[in-house]
Image (cartoon, rainbow, N blue to C red):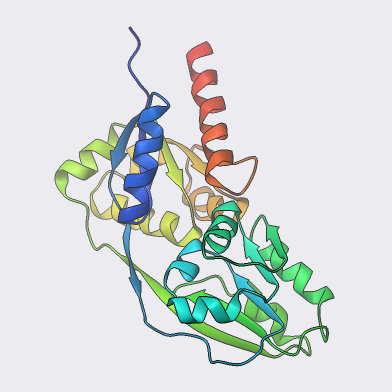
Length: 244
């Protein structure tokens, strides 16, 4: 009987447990070594009409109160990834939503919307890619940024966590920030060579970038920017491993 492939989940704590359950159901051996904890800031958008809502993470929706969500339900949204789209739907969002693979693709679409909306509302993380703000800084659009949450990075993995990660075959990465933190944690734990030798499966090209720059041996990108696409790419990589 072949051993189940070991997969390190490089996510914040709560989401990592949910992903682990899905991996177990698919026959993998998940390894939990969370890279961050999500901390809501309590900040919320002002009670006024916006022309467009922008969100790059499902956490931005989950961090808002019911009253704030109610005010945004009829405003068109531009979002990154299927998970963010589903979070909007679960929150009762009723207006049109456009889903993009990453912040760069969303930013390109915003260029075409210059002048079409009175004001864009960006539901943001404290640590974030600056692409969207850079794009809109060069346009006539007015941007209101509300920092809804912080992905508070862990300072260290325990020795047990680090050893478990080093013994994996695959690692899953969901954001550029979490990939960067994972690299830092691996270096602090002195398992960097083993970590870079894993097969890293990433949600998008932007997520893959820091791993590629760090010299990771094998970095793969999901077919679609959501967890089903990520797990599909993992399955392909695992099947290829069995064939060789």
